[in-house]
Each structure stands twice: as C-alpha cells, then as structure tokens.
Length: 209
Ligand SMILES: C[S@@+](CC[C@H](N)C(=O)[O-])C[C@H]1O[C@@H](n2cnc3c(N)ncnc32)[C@H](O)[C@@H]1O
Image (tube, rainbow, N blue to C red):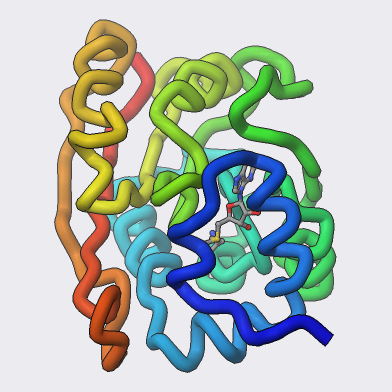
C-alpha cells in the first residue's frame, strides 16, 4: 500500500516518467484525498469559463491531462462530445468510470500526438500546465489538432507563467491565435495547506486563428 500523496509530491515531479509513477499510486484516492479535501476548484473554474466563452460549434472538446475526469464531470451537462487525454492509464481508468468521455487517449503530451490535424473544436485543461508536468511547447501540438476558430480554455500555474516560458510561447504563437484573455483565480477554496492553499492559476483563453 503506497503512502498518501500530496501537492508537494505533485510539484516535485520533473519528467513524464515521474508523472506516470506518481499518478499510478494516486489515481484511486485522487478525487477524495486530493480534490475533495483540498477543495480543488480549477476544473470547475475551467468548466465555468468554457461555458462563458464557448459557442455551439466548439466541439468536439479535448480535455488535456484529464486525469480522473473532473472537468468532464462538470462539463457533462453540456451534452457535447469530450475526449480525455492523459499519460496515466490509472487516472484514465477512473475517468472512464464516470461515463463522460467519448474517447480515452493514453499519450504523452510532450510528444507528437496520434491525432489528425484540425480535429478538435476546443481544448480544455486544468492542473496540467504546472510544476514539472507539461510545459508550453505542448501548445504546438494542441494547435495542430485544433481546427481554425477552436477555443482554448486552460489553467497555467501562476508561478510558472513566466518562469516556464508560457509568456514567451504565447508571443511566439501570437500570429496563430487571438489575443489571450487571462483570469487569475484561486486553485483551492477552503484549503488550509500552508504552502499551497493560496495558490492561484491563470485561466488562459484564446482561439486558434
Ligand atoms: C494535477 S493532475 C490534473 C488532472 C485533472 N485535469 C484535474 O484537474 O483534476 C495532472 C495530470 O496531468 C497528467 N500528465 C502529467 N504529465 C503528462 C504528460 N507528459 N502527458 C500527458 N499527461 C500528463 C497526469 O497524469 C495527471 O493526470
């Protein structure tokens, strides 16, 4: 039996292999031990901002680093097609049980994806562009698999926006996207964690041109 996982463990990872190992052990307790106990709000915020910015043509949707499918649960009512992509088969197994995803894709977002060009009408993501997880270069592949006009609504951890080069990446791709809108929100609600309880994420919203 592995010991209880925490935000400190999540923020300590450095490679895709670290992600596979961490989330293999965390998957079965992630929703209860992590999301519920920490009042983790990012997936709900993404669903709310998706509702705010999207139109009926923003489909199908790809949930990037979908994990156990928390965004899918919140978006389920919109009755649009949502696919889940993640590197962790164990996290995806939990997502599958929730019956909100049309397709479950196990893949490493730091590599080329086996998805055809211009397929998706929207990209959503919570908690994936964060410490040691997935960096800004993944935007290139996400743009490739999204059709012109497709909507992006994703969280970037506020401490990494500059340090990890998300600001530079958005400038690099600026000819391919509309001017991004940013909303800084709390990642957690009622969370007493002294190190991370007040962490914020930057909800970043743009469309592919
Ligand atoms: C903090 S969890 C977020 C899960 C879900 N989006 C949520 O908000 O609850 C981060 C997710 O990113 C996935 N991940 C990390 N590195 C990845 C990579 N290189 N490719 C694909 N998924 C990755 C992990 O497996 C994990 O499910």
